[in-house]
Length: 372
Image (cartoon, rainbow, N blue to C red):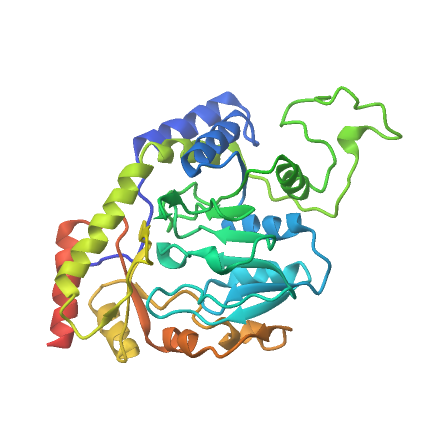
């Protein structure tokens, strides 16, 4: 039997929506993109949601919208996925790594000094971060790419930061094939994010609209063709958004199934000599994976792989140990003992909605045979 680590769950509703886009003759971002943005913002409890072509682009735009001076120091956990850190570097800022907690896989709280200009951190594998250690006035960007549907202190993730991001890669909670989202409550930040996304233009007209401000020709140049920032083209098309609209109808069920699958694995594996990652205090994760630590990580990973059970280490592990950052300027606060332990001992198994009870039983049986 093969048990995938992750995957998309799609069907006729997604196909039907894509066909509607094809028949409409309008393929660029339009009505479907606006509808998906609206529904996703409502689900996340955000005032604005801006769709982009990937979760990585969402992080780049969030960092861009902060418009910090080059050389600004940005606090971030040592354990995570590379693009969370890459966006800091790509904007000319300096990552300041702090340790991660093996019990939750998340950033360890520290005393944050006034040299830190922002905090960027992910809710690792769906486990929510408590940002209570960050002083008021320091902007937080929440990377929610693994955590759609997770709550902490009764609130959806993404509600603490000035911006938050999501990814719709096929492995994530919902998919648009490729795609991402930036959320914010700030109308000003929304406008800045859209400017950077759309080539750096100054105009804020929606696609297909002209002269929303009524002053298009009152400047020394056509406002629709005026560029205020050094931007990108990180837009998305209505095909992807149409898939997202259909996925929104499934999202609550996906979140519940992830929790049920995680609990099923926990009940079947809790007596084994592994250190299972637990939910952060006062949280209810929408688990991206079932994670644990074992000092036999590589041996177990080979065994699971040989027996068809998908498995992964914890994203990029301790990122300062990755080759990509050998010649990059960064700083470290304290030691990275927890991050190094995660790097060497953490493993996770799939719990996405496409895994059924027969697959879960096979995963449990395979794990138990290894330890027997």
